[in-house]
Image (cartoon, rainbow, N blue to C red):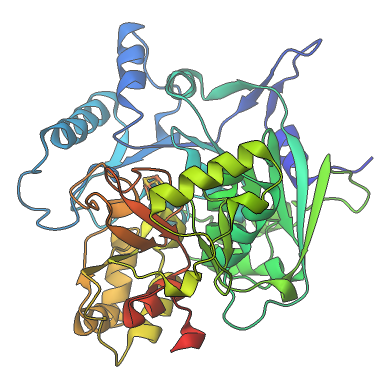
Length: 467
Ligand code: SF4
């Protein structure tokens, strides 16, 4: 029987097959690290008197606790400052390459690595961070791990794991105008639920996926974890190869030719069987926005806030009632009538150059609505920031009335100075809308950069078609 893409990558990294249901031992090609989930791993290694097994396959950056303004000044938050200095000290002691705040290659852990060409097809990539699934856009098997596993990978460059199940997500047909990768993934999560992908590697396939750029593919794989999946993958193709060619860490010369030959084998065989399969018709999709407090509580932008009384499942009904109350909304209220206070364009989901270009193209020649308190535009990595400035996007954002920031996780989570205050409502291109995610009592609507930009112009949730 044929193999799926995920099974091929797994088989190519198998160090030892587990007997009688025991976990397999898998070789890990690359581990990415940041300041939040690495301290205990370094401590564990130090206590055990070990050194990293393959230090050149570890690479670290600073992202969660970094400020995005005044980066040359001391960090205003003591805890954040300690997290960052601890990472710097640990990386120095163990010889791990680090791109700290202020470095040209610093950025969100899932954004700086692809830009440098570190993320490549067929690799196994891990990080103590759930959105490691992003790297699956290149046909890598990439997933988040816990801190004890981070220590294990540092010490051995391997991981003990039971094979994941596989689920095909087919997006057939052509995407309608104005529908983006973010809308696809929000629609998928609304369909299968936040637990629908549990235990699976999702493989996104079909014409609509093949037509996407690498930045868009990363947006989709990034949010696989929001459907509960271990990882998301897309088979590498000419789009993938064109993106990688010439990047600093991509293979060069003869090694490039050899890599391409191998990468072309990384696709699901015609006779492979997935454990589960879901199909969506691209033509049915429209811009999607969340109304609730998990990424599965979303709806097309033309819809209204659901009435919990119409939800048959008791658990879902209670969750919807609670979410609507927390979000300060009313059943039946049109999504497009919801006024927003703050617009956040950034994060490892949608802070890439194409996202910034999309937002800038919509904002150009406009000013933000008077009712909008602030518009934050935060590139996902410093290289992306530099590229955006070369293209003059920063000037468009500033003319619009937006704040142009340094790279980092920023308002994706309330772990740095970029936070919402209680009851402040944002439209956000990030990936999580949990209670308090963007600050205590914050209210988050997830959407694409296009919808965020149009909302910044009109003041209420809008798509570019509404302008
Ligand atoms: S941008 Fe958000 S989701 Fe991505 S790594 Fe940072 S905190 Fe995590």
